[in-house]
Image (cartoon, rainbow, N blue to C red):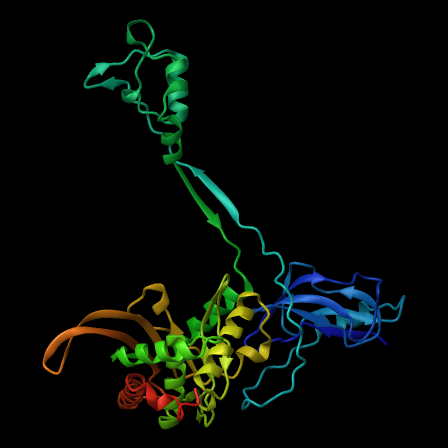
Length: 422
C-alpha cells in the first residue's frame, strides 16, 4: 500500500520548505534510509532520507519549489500502483486546527547537513531615464549641427554645449559625437537600475520572527558602560599561556552573562501567554553572521563551562554556520541571546529580542577615551552594552540589577576564572 511522505518540519521555526534537489525520480526504487531529497529550511539545506521501501510514484514538490510543512512531498508504493485517488483524498481532507500546547521535548530525526544548494539568480533591471534634451545653444549662441549628429546626441542624452564642432565653421558632425569622451559616462548617468534579489527561506524567517518579536513584545532598553581595562589585561595574560585556543572578548561576555543569569533568573525567562517560563538552565544563543542572514547557535549550560570551553565551542559553531553544516539541535533551546557588533566598529546599538527569550544583550566595541580614576584623568577603555527587555516578563529594576551584576563580573574577571581553572 502506498505511503504519503509529507514536507517534514526540520526546525522549530520552519513553516515552509524548498526542495533544493531530488536524488530520485518517479519510477526509481527507494530503500528505507536512502537519500531521497535535499530540503532548504530557514536555517540550512538538509538531507532527507526515505522512511519506506518501494518505488517513487509521485513527486508533490518540484525542484526549486516550496511547500508548507505537512504538504505532500512524495508518494512511495509498489510499482504500477495507482495513487491518484490517494493523493486526491489527502489534498481534499480538512486540515486540523493547531492547538497551543505546552512545549515538550520531542525526539527528532537528526538529518545530516549538506552543502547549500545553488541560490536563485538575481534579476538585474535597467530602466532608461528620460533622455536629456540636447542643448543647441551656448550662452545664447545657436550651435551648428548636422541632422545625423543631432539624432546621435539625442540618443545618447548629450549636452551639446560641451561638444566641440570640427566641421566647417565649427559645425558639430557625426565624428564629434562619436569621439566625445563624456558620451558613455553621460549615457550611464541617465539610466536607473536595480537588482531584484530572491528572498531565501532564511531571510523570510528572519523577517517573520523579528517582525513578530518587535511588534508583539513591548521592548524597552537599558544601556550601561563597562570599564574593560581588567578584561583586556586578563585576556592578554591568558592568551600568552594558552596558545591553542585564544580567548576573545566575546567569550568573557558569554561567561559573565551566564553567571549573571544564574543570579537573576527573571532575565532567563520567556513569555508563554498563560505562564512565564523561568529556566533553571542557561543556554546562550550567540548570533553569527552568514551570507543569507543570521544564525544563532546555542552554547548550552554556559554557566558550567570554562572560558576555554566556551571559546572552542563558539569557534566551531561559527565555522559550521558559515559552511551551513549546523544541525537543528545546534540552534534550538536558547534561553538568552547575545549579539556582538563590536568587531565591526559599532559603538552602541539596540537588538530585537530573539524569541522565545525575554532579553537580548547587544555588545558594542571597546573605545579608548579619557576617564577619571583616583581623581586623575587617565586613558581608559570602555564598552557599552544594551539590554533589550520584553516588558511583559522583565521590569526596569530587574533589568538594571542584571546589568549591574554583569558589569561587576566584567570589571573583575578574576571572578569568572573558577579558581584559575580557565
